[in-house]
Image (cartoon, rainbow, N blue to C red; front, side, top):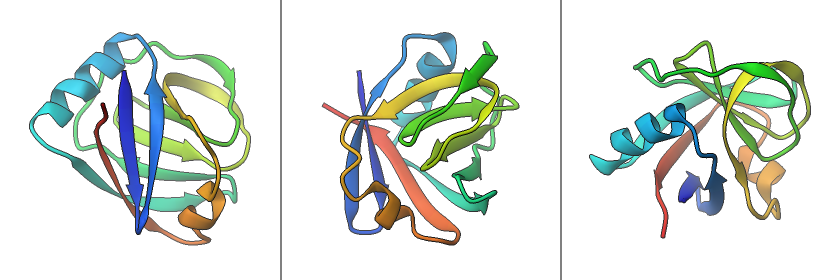
Length: 116
């Protein structure tokens, strides 16, 4: 399954994982796109509060640019760098062309919607 990630004028496509957290996220997006204010954190990720808890199945993970994960059950994290931590994987951006530029250096508004 695919998800669209809109950041400013840029739209990226992500391939979603097959797990309970993704199932819950898809149900949320079926009601319409989700827009999160995502804060810069540590120079390698953006973090946004989802406003709801999703079922977590955390495992120790080393992330790469383009990874989308669930943190603490209620935060979506998108990576433009790498980190090792315990996350639930949600998906991965298919094509990183322009990814870092779109995310910029500060806080951003990101809209997640169901893809084709």
